[in-house]
Length: 449
View 1 (cartoon, rainbow, N blue to C red):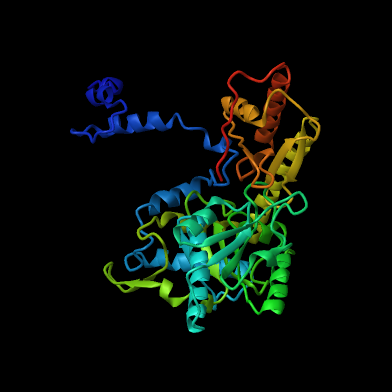
View 2 (cartoon, rainbow, N blue to C red):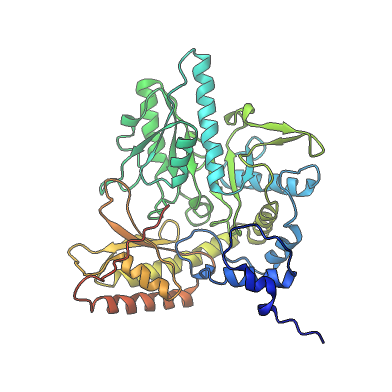
């Protein structure tokens, strides 16, 4: 038998951290081992409590993934069944979000960020068309949103030359709730963004109150402003845990909704979805037709070639879970979130500001009057040493002097792991409380949303 000492292969010895393109080929086992050993240094995805992105699906999903990872979602002529599955998925979401699936329009995306971009572009294009028809200027569009929006909306405004108008969060108004909304709206406003599950705290913004404020604006000014709901997380939670909340297409001003299939849609990264309540809300000139992949195909996306596997996995999950399954999974996550919130809230150092009642997210800060020689960044650093990624970060403008810590509970974080997390938090807080002065090398690493 030939002995193959893989760690003493010439290619293994030469690899290092060179940035130059390799001159020679190497054996597949050697290349595999090099890459395997490098990614082994990454954190444990299951213990990453900073991310909303799913990290577990199960054996059957893994098998389907392997069977479909070579499918190109854009090539609908070559992969007609995958294309049909994509359409079924967004029509199912249209039904879930209370509009007629036959009259809706939608598409899959790489993630909710691309879905947000498409929703925002539709708002801008409809505004431009209406202004041109009326013979008015189209050079100064603006978009109104909370200062607690996810960074994708900052990117959207930057990339497409739109003025972002941020409604600041305050103690009295910790999210966009319609208060003072009229102060930010004028004839150049292309739309308002409502968030179902603010990234910082997990709370839902009250879409009906935002819509009511816009009704008042229209009554006074004649301006008819549409809403895009960024449901990156809550869009796949609220229909199952809080079906009584009207946030979706039941609210007439909601023209479009985006969500992440790879967050609480329970799919591996990356897949997202955007749905328009009616075909008329999606301008035709945003849809392109291409023929160079075989048949003539409509395409609506910022990307072109992209994986079809996650779309297949989304369909698998919809079929496997159904409404009852999603409700059970999210209820379990919410119970874990509330148990973490209770445990943290019982610690005298902390005040819980989000207890998982909306999406299963727990956030806390130092309680009023508590002064310690350590910070939440220090606690995050010590938890990371035990494998946990628990982010600390300042709140948005107007509240940026406050630092919070957050745990995202996803499918796969059960009571046993949660108990271990709480035990580690208690142990590290006990250790940090022995400090008589700040650490000599203070941790200032934040978390970028």
